[in-house]
Amino acid sequence: MGDSKNYRRKFFSDHPVCCFCGGGRAIEEIEHIPPRFMFINKHRPSGFEFPTCIECNRASRKTDTVVSFLTKFASIQNLSEKYHSDFEATAKGLLRNCPETYDEILSGRFGNRQEEKRYKKTHNEDVVIVSLGPKQREHINLFGLKLTLAAYYLVSGNIASSDAYITIYIHTSKNLIENTIPQQLNFLGEFHTMQQGNWSVPDQFSYRYGSTDDKKNAVFQFLMHNNLLLSTFIFDGSADEKSRLKLNEHLTVGSLRAVNDVKRNPFPSISMSYEQT
Ligand SMILES: [Zn+2]
Image (cartoon, rainbow, N blue to C red; front, side):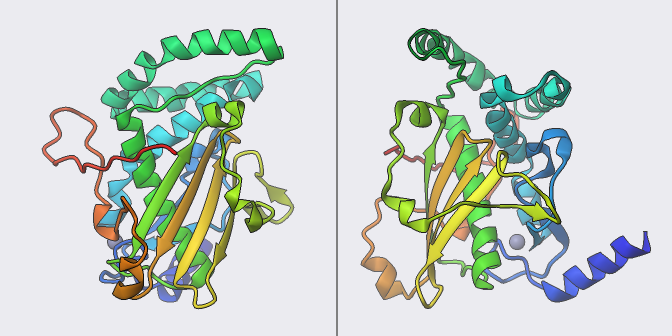
């Protein structure tokens, strides 16, 4: 008990400022991203804990459920029987907290099942194909935004400023199966994973990154359960430098708002649309 209090006190003094909203707010809580639910039986190594204000922490609550479900779902055939109850609990959480996204995932299943059967015939391998609808994309973008801001803080020691640009590319099991993952980021080298002592989770979460010498701009790849791959870029240079980037679409720290999922939710939905490349 005393240990966890000491840990908290030390964490708060080492990381006094929320790393998600541009450096304007003091730490109020400790954020675990990727979240505990994403790991089988919530068994998560430490090392990815981040200072957050309450608002930034709450913004991704539903999103954590959606992304945890999606990543576990596509690897369900690799999970042994004893983990199925963990998966069921994740599915129930999704149905309860994000009914719209749940419906969207179910309605996308039919076409995928046909494809899965074809794949089984030709490759003699069980796969689960996930294709994403707009609701799922919105959640994954929010998740990718937070994960990028967190990882940027971790590797550079900098809090991204409120006008940093962030872009996110999403690749799913479908891209992995069809071999349509762009190879341009392979220069980043080996993936790292979270590690606590001798225990690590390479099958559940891994990442790699590179940055410019001034650490203002960085690129990340995050791989979850070997089926959801996010390639993300953060540009936090001068306004001049950013204006030369000619990005079609980007997010900023200001995009960090909860995704509206329950129809009666009084908060307006953010509109972010991303074309998959
Ligand atoms: Zn914040």
